[in-house]
Length: 71
Image (cartoon, rainbow, N blue to C red; front, side):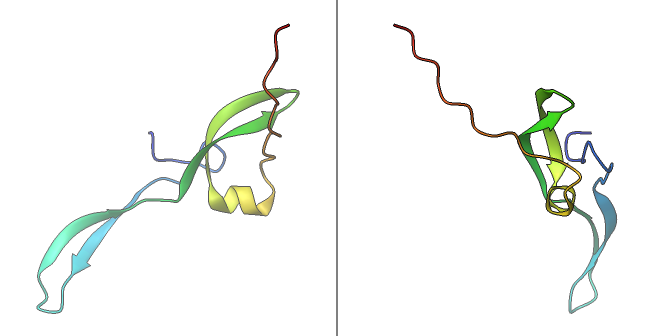
C-alpha cells in the first residue's frame, strides 16, 4: 500500500466521522508518511517512512550528494 510506512507497517486507519448533528460518515486517517532517501546497510534507498520512525532513529537519512561535474 502506498500510504504505509515501510519500516513499521503503519497504515491508514478506518473510522467514522460524527458531526455535531450526529451525521455519520466513514473516513480514513492517514499516517504522516514521507518519501526520502535512507541508508540501508551500505546502500542509499528511497523509502516511504512515517515521521515517528524518522524521529525515533529507526531510520538514518542519507546525506545529500553533490552533483557530479564533468570536465
